[in-house]
Length: 109
Length: 113
Image (cartoon, rainbow over all chains, first blue to last red):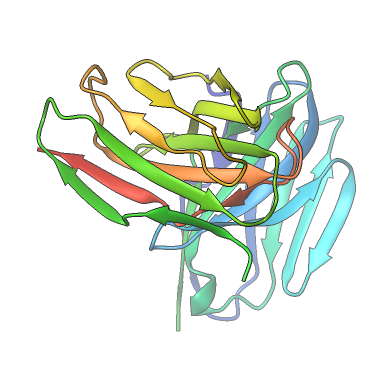
């Protein structure tokens, strides 16, 4: 079983829909990252959080340390949000990042 | 503009040849990382360096080598000993080690024929 699990693996949506991507992990962590990978391959860091909630524009990330779970929400989704969203956790023991396999999001007009 | 550059974007090599992937950053970051991405798998750490002239093996270092002679440069050599070299390679950097917020380059897609 992977130490970082994301769901769903694939997600399609109509423009304007509210999107939720989930991440569960099984190791002790000191931080969790949400990353966005565009079709060309480049990766952008969206959030780094260790508790609570962060918001940037239409993106919201939450984390529940007790439940070892994080969610990434996209409000009013747009075709330009189409990308792969990757969850990664910083292991408390090894201090290295462990990556999930990603959620592929496609938003249609 | 500050950032990380990787070159080339696409690279083709014949089986048995060594190949070096370039990674340069002008962010003045101490730590640099090399990851490999394969379809259906999460990124896996190949090598990382927290300071000039020092580097450590990651989870899948076999068949790879690196050097860190300058702060801004961290080239990765894929040797002929790497059994399955065809993959997407990503370089990243961060202000400090310990997997702080990492900034990623655009990646190099290596295909070994």
